[in-house]
Figure (tube, rainbow, N blue to C red):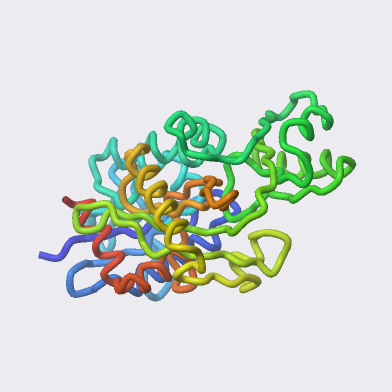
Length: 324
């Protein structure tokens, strides 16, 4: 008997448009002979199942079900394609855990932790994972540019602490531009992280649970046409994403080991994509994403294809792992 699979997409953050694209690719790729697939759009003002004719049916949040033609449909598993809140920060994970519905992403605590860049990096540092030097600010804190520069130097990156897709991020070269960058980041989040600029090769590593085991996918080298890997570089084609990365075997072995270690230290499940920059041939972790992009152009699907895993197999494996 075919399983009912809800693909949740949309969300409450600026990443909702990217999430809708990711969810649509998952919907198109899943094997319809194995699964009954439902697109479920989650927004602040409505949760709805959207059929192929764009008709909308409200989701009953009490049981995460939908009624169509007087028939109540429940779901055997949820494929999480929501980037940002509430799909990547732990809220949906907690909700499905309370309802005892399997889902394809990591658990609630892991989602909340990895979504908070500052907390995640702080935890991983205790295990010897190398990171950039950083300075933290909360909204309302006094801003001392001299203290910040003494800690992280110039140039540096000012980032919203809990945001994805490079929203709320600025590369700062001059002291007089620092406060503007901080104000810009605070528009996205009430916490920010300011990091030293690491001048080196930037790479992205996908790690998944595949057929019951942790699998590190082929490494991608990121070469942005812009000042850094910003929104335009990520989504508007203003970058080169080279898989496999043009790095030495020694560097590849190091970052593969670290990426697997990060995945297992954090007790992640499902998908993850972590970003690193090499400094003195040592990988320094920037961040961990637990709901990465799923479009055909996104990095993790590219890595899966390089590993000989089709999108149908990639997404179907995630469902089977969740059901397991």
